[in-house]
Amino acid sequence: MADLSQVQEHAEVIGADGVHVGTVDHVDGNRIKLTKQDSGEGRHKGHHHYISGGLVADVEGGVVRLSANADVAVTFEEEEDAG
Image (cartoon, rainbow, N blue to C red; front, side, top):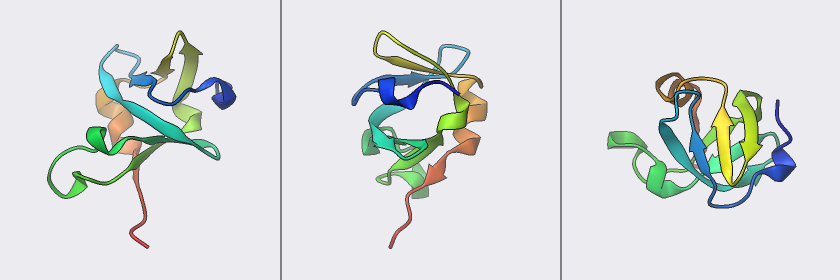
């Protein structure tokens, strides 16, 4: 796992394949909270989602690169609790 203290607000999160996954809202413990604008479609729209810090392979130049391809990484996203 990369050093999450290097993750900056509004950094782009990309999969190992270079595909956009989301934009960092902030780091919350060992997870990265994504902005609502990258929240997906349908029932997921308008909710914050989280990416586990364990998926972060590298943080460099304002970009967070994940160890999984984007289509796989989004299956590991956690949705913000409603309450």
